Length: 140
Length: 476
Image (cartoon, each protein chain N blue to C red):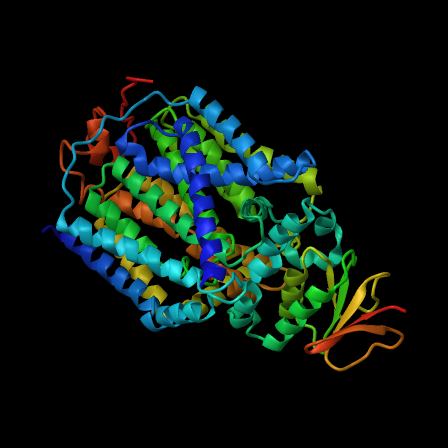
């Protein structure tokens, strides 16, 4: 075998080994087990069990519950959380899409409803539904 | 299991149907014959996805509901047109050679790589930040609104979804959802292992046509299939995997056009240009780089400039023009291009970008770079391979230096985007490296697809230097 071939084979083997080590069997097995455990559940519950909701699973339950109760024709939802983060904004925007979402805005646009994550009640708003982790409010 | 398995099976059927439509349209892109079968499958899948995304755009523009009817109407028109414009060249079937033991092992590795990525991609609904905030968010909005709402491009509060990004991928997501009849962001993840398989087919087919032995082509594809930085759960749903497929199509088709391997090369360049430009903003950059590189590489040749340049530039200009019509002119808000004329301010930022990238590169990656360098040195000079590697190097340079213009600072962009975007160059790098290795593992004489098709040049020679493998024009 030529030197070039031997060099190429050795380098390929090193690369393959490096790639193989990045594919940890334990991770793959864990993923298969997660899939087996969640595959029979509805889509929202699979997302709840997944990485996208891991930063605050209760927040995802709150969002999904709110989404199901938002009246048809609602022009937008203002979500109030104690500590607004981009992750919270992205997840809320995706869950509610195509209904527009604002996260903890200074002013809520007219006819929008408010979804408050936590126990606070906005002054001057009436509660329209209690949901896990918070409540939905509308202007009187 | 049925909550996931039934939609997954439906998605698989949809992707196969879309691929079949594309396979029909690919008669206008690649010559007939077994030597081109892998290419035709890969290009067919890319064309099918483009038709599906295009059917959504078309339906929206006609204020109709997207779905099977617009898709099938557009597919019928495109496939009919493709049959009229089909390439009449036919590559003679290569002598059938039994799979060697090495080929079987390498093929098994390739399948294992696809299965591993499928396991990672399909574990849960797509969840990466960029899917949730950008690609999936827009696709879901298009699907439920049955239109492209103007607020996506106008509202400041939706700036996080990057209104300046192309909408090809969101249109594709919406198109899949319209065919499925619902938005299922878990089953839809199946698109990504399909894209990986199409990328591997394109790589395998191109290397084989360039004279690589089956073992080398399987080995290259098998190695790429295990490249976890690209094919991992986190990138599933984002634009890197689709773009990496598009870049491989772009690079290989430009090489084919420069070497005039067949009459379909120009058309493939045009299709690849559309796919890249419609997928990500840097797709346009890669098309521009390909245009410059093609001009440089073809200085010694005649006849390239006008037609190939048009095939690269016009489709990209069409895509850019369509986006302008849809949303107007939107700035790249993440970047401050005024820094380009302030060398004093730019230099330390460039230095910071490079320093952060070097500091955050793990040891394993350096080992990988060293092994790649050894592979490149072990190979022999290959014009086709060099073109692909230079295209990838230009991409790498852009990904490394662009953070210097980031409004949020170089370190932030390097940390959030550098490694995953660079990973998208892997198919180009593997193809370029593979081309350099062809002289070491050429197809045995007399059984090369190119040799069988009547090329006057040896298969290794066709990869090492530009030359037109001659295809017969028998049959139609």
